[in-house]
Image (cartoon, rainbow, N blue to C red; front, side, top):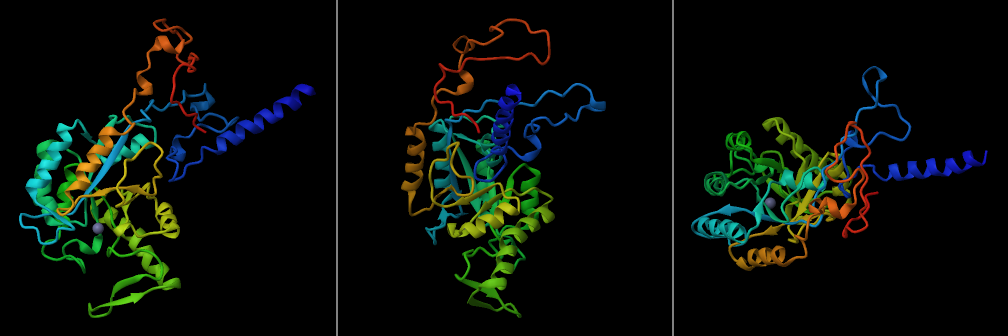
Length: 356
Ligand SMILES: [Zn+2]
């Protein structure tokens, strides 16, 4: 009887620790499908045979850091220095990344790292282009190809050519499809690129195409913002046959309500334009990007310096030698069973945070 009473609190404690693994956009946990089986539940082995081995995550370097850049138009003659850069200046920056030993990785690799599924180099960068300008297709893409860099396009759907806000400089759906076919990551940036918070000034297209300034509240706002956040994602997914999991917030103007909408729509990460190094613990619903503009070249220089001198890049946990771990069975021994328990003494390894 005494033994049974002692076991009960132990089972409760185990269940509590499992609960904390529930996935959410803010803590970067694994999706539900790859969570370990609940305590005591039967394994879905064929015909109730022996339990299938658990798939374990690779050990990722949690000290790695990345910076995310955001570019807009590439033009030879700068007229709007707040959102433009010359192709020459852009190419020079891409080269600087290479020269500084900063690896350019894809957005999806960054997210896979945050899920604990994939390692990334200790110092790396992600490149993104906002708004869907044709110069991103015609000018930026060939430069990115030259360096072999992956990148992400953040598109607002009404700004694509043919949409209510898509002018002659806008990218076309055909160009986006071409990028998709060649591995370019295409993600969401709303429908009409406006302040997403309730009660803020927005422009609304009235009947006949005339646009009027207004403020929406209540159900009218909810309907509008749903289309901006959820509708734009669905449109990109349907027209391009892709999976959209990233959301760049126009001007960085959002709040908890918008975050919740985006989270419920299936966005895994949300991005602002408040540049900062991204670490393993940066909240996934407000990842800051450095917006690079012709009139602020120092932003790029500072961002590169930031990742160059940050505390990231320390020895990866995965590189710890077996001799330091006092493993059981010992390093080099042959194991004859597929499911042999392997134990390691981690007391001499610093920088490990227990996952709860
Ligand atoms: Zn934008």
